[in-house]
Length: 315
Image (cartoon, rainbow, N blue to C red; front, side):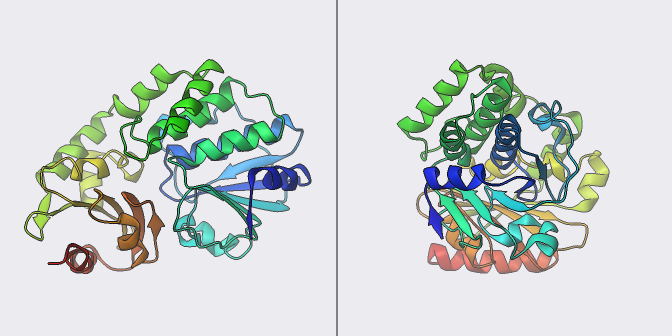
């Protein structure tokens, strides 16, 4: 059932021992939502913790390093920034069909939770900001940093067409409340580890083009991680690279998982709906940024994706 911010706040006020799930291959928005909500619930005297199926990238450590770990048997389960249950990764095996509340901003949300707070805004953290204010929690620097991180990362530092005046107003409010926008933006957009720099070099050198150069594909293999000393937590900066090439309408970043299946990040311009392509493989997202899993090895996954791209492009 769909609910609004006021109804969502009322539900959370009645709950305790709250487990917050973020999506696999976590980014700034899902983590910002999760840890901001966790901090707010702690401020209300409730027990809450955040978990993820994958390792959280080191650069996001400031979101949670000062949060005390809490051990309890969960009684209420919340998913944040998760459009479909399969985006929970391995957590789906444990929590699939058991999620009480979903807070999201993807139009492709499958309404898998008992209750869903869904606002199609550029970043789910915009909605969580409203929710925390409705809960009556005073937003401190820790919460402000979490929410600002989600907004700036899901908007490409406010570069994407999805950004609205309300997005800027939310970000400005968070800066007024203490969010360290300069430090956060440097960490998210201007800082690379040496291992990532090596991985990015290999990825760009290996970029291939299909459908009359209208589709760009980056493939990241387990061997590339071994060569560079990098790992999957450092791949967040790769998908935008595919969309920077002139003439490209669909950018695919195909990451080989350890089990040889693939996780795919999709970036497009207005001529193609990225979420439509992701949905063909059980995924979801936004019109210009989406993700999915393909239960196939790299070569077969690439073939299947290119075939669907050709259909969307009318080739």
